[in-house]
Image 1 (cartoon, helix red, strand yellow):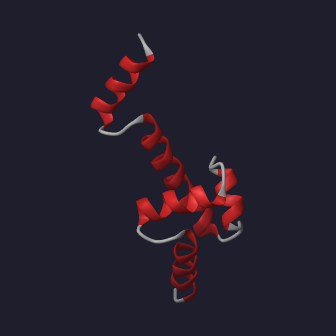
Image 2: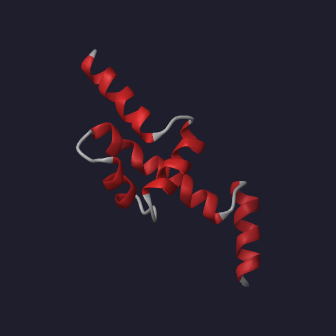
Length: 82
């Protein structure tokens, strides 16, 4: 199977490209690290396979509607108020 065929079939099955799928997977994988509060955003970015913190922030904002720092602080507020 050619690379193009594989990519086309993947997109037909998932509705997104392989690159989009991997980015979404990495963002979702970052959520527990951010919620944990033990890691900096730069560390989370590296742990989840992003090439830079700015790429992570852009992907996160696109998927989650806020930046990682806002998400991090919103979780601290939830934990603190529990």
